[in-house]
Image 1 (cartoon, helix red, strand yellow):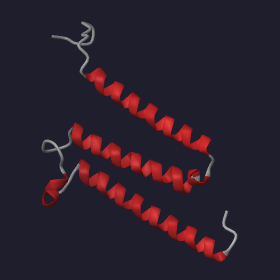
Image 2 (image 1 turned 30 degrees about the horizontal axis):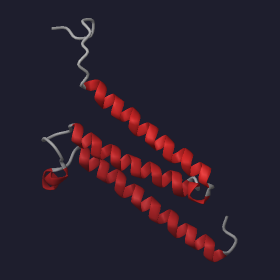
Image 3 (image 1 turned 90 degrees about the vertical axis):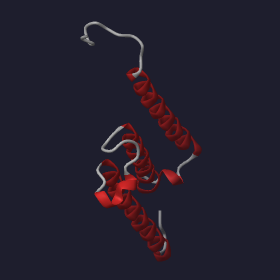
Length: 116
């Protein structure tokens, strides 16, 4: 914790910078999802919202969640065990997303779910 006025001012500056980064990330996420005509270069992939826009949005959301966890939840001042738990949870989350994407292209078809 902060013991002096200088440390408090430094923490206040850090919090305001993280708030600004979160605000920019939120605006960027909205612009990637539905960009106006003059920001056409933000629309990755095909025109309109597609899987590439979702991937970019998830990357921005992961960055924002990491900022909140590290700065606002003070994980950057914790012991190494907390870092291992945090990194392993991110790896597990990435594995789960990969399994979801793999399930979409599964060659197994069930006649109850796929009507032809």
